[in-house]
Length: 317
Image 1 (cartoon, rainbow, N blue to C red):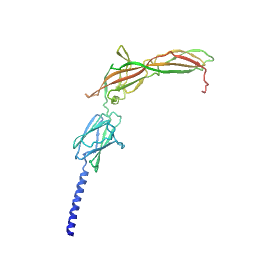
Image 2: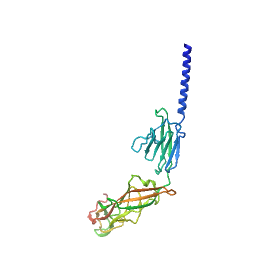
Image 3: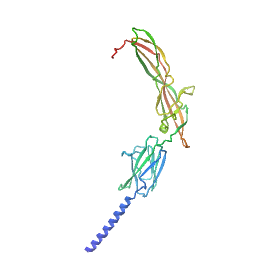
Image 4: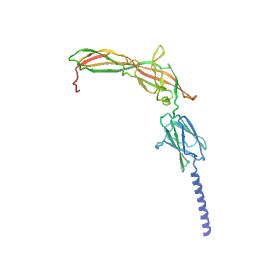
């Protein structure tokens, strides 16, 4: 009986040894054949073949350890077939032994990286795949932009803003009248906003340098017609510039040996028009059509300029 017990224990130990070795070998075999992928900055699709089927996408991380989230703000994971999306790409599993990574054009100005963590369903074994995308330099260019009037588009009054300037004149030996020139519109900036119907930011797809983002700028609407300004402006989500009134001046009296205060109210209007913009890429048939609204607030007139005279303040004030 003792010999039989010893023989049974020996056989049992051999079985356990082989099972442990088999399990170790299974764990030593990676889900994916490659640990790291580096792709160009243009939109790319990577299909990663898998050696096994018993895996899930447990998480997706940034290089600093931060957890990447999906389009709904939840941590990225994929436990079966399907697709999860993040802000610059997506991860799809439509086959048991394949994983597809789709990346958008990288116009972020620096390389983008993510780490995909794969594991067994029970989490007993895991591995990582490193994805790196270079910066895209094949920028889109503005092929055309057209403006039109849609419902609720037009021009309306947009209130006033105060303007003022103070001159302190200590020249001369007594009170005398001279002339000075004031420019009430010089710092009355025109502000504008290019919005898109999709919430995308097409300025990121364009070269930030040079003149590739210059577009015609509507100046007013007359009898249902959009009148363009002479100077082009940069297409951006928010911008400002000195408008065509900046050089308008007024000649006013200046009292010597006095403090002279000039002030007025600058009147503003708000303009809204719709636009369609076509973007294209050199050497490619790829085009993007962007639609949205241009909102613009601009000065158009001012109240009569008031002139107030008071005694000089102390020189050390």
